Length: 137
Length: 137
DNA sequence: GAGTAGATACTAAGACTTTCGTACCACCAA
DNA sequence: TTGGTGGTACGAAAGTCTTAGTATCTACTC
Image 1 (cartoon, rainbow over the protein chains, first blue to last red):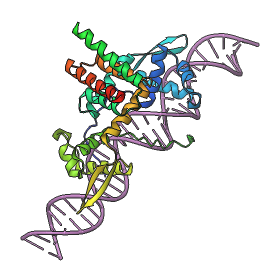
Image 2: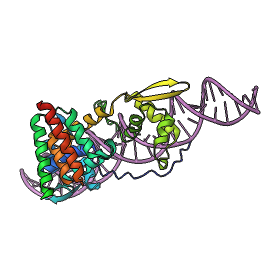
Image 3: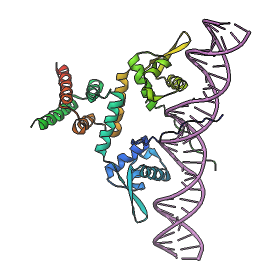
């Protein structure tokens, strides 16, 4: 039957998977942490085996999402990517893929049908005003 | 070696995969379309086999992302989910997972380090003003 | 030195995704 | 009637993701 197919792309996805994001979130909060540190921050009902957590972090290091340093006998992991930067990258990607590359339409959707409080909206507008004023000055 | 493990969750992910989003985007633009219609809208260098496209749409129907109707001998597919709604859902999820559940911080990131033009920023502020005024009235 | 505790490394099961080939069917034309 | 043409259905290969078991290493203790 021999399904000869072209070489498959390496994909090299730059983006965190679901679980990787879960872990990275804790590392961002911690700054730095061991397997046990990260595991301790997950919801108790998460119930993830220690070895699973270790595997996940090892893979994240292979993908260069984190770096590690041995302290005594344990590895301590550190994000190799700032949360800010990853947020930006993600927003760019989402805007591209789902909002026709126009970030304004993204905000439009956000303020239109999200159940955002008046307060939050004001806050957002304040952000914008500040940003626009900074640029003008 | 027998890795007996608990039943795995069905996942039921509600979210489109990469390729599914690619297809759905074309269906949203078309309103309605056959395998050939969708395929025709993909970039020529995409080079996806007809049967692959057919499979993708069939799977999307199984997942209830689209519905189909037979016209003559071909199926015509239609989104079962409005683009607006999917955008909202996606933003909610992203805000939750990457922005601590505070949509304002999402907009903050967007206006802070995106290479957004003055024009775009004004546009966004206009949206907000309109929205806030609507609510106040 | 043997045993235990805590860590890392390796392997693998099982799910899902993406892709495409093969089989099959229906219709129309020569 | 035979053979294309254009469609759907199915199955499977190859990759990735998530999870966890097993093996191994190292140090400390008795």
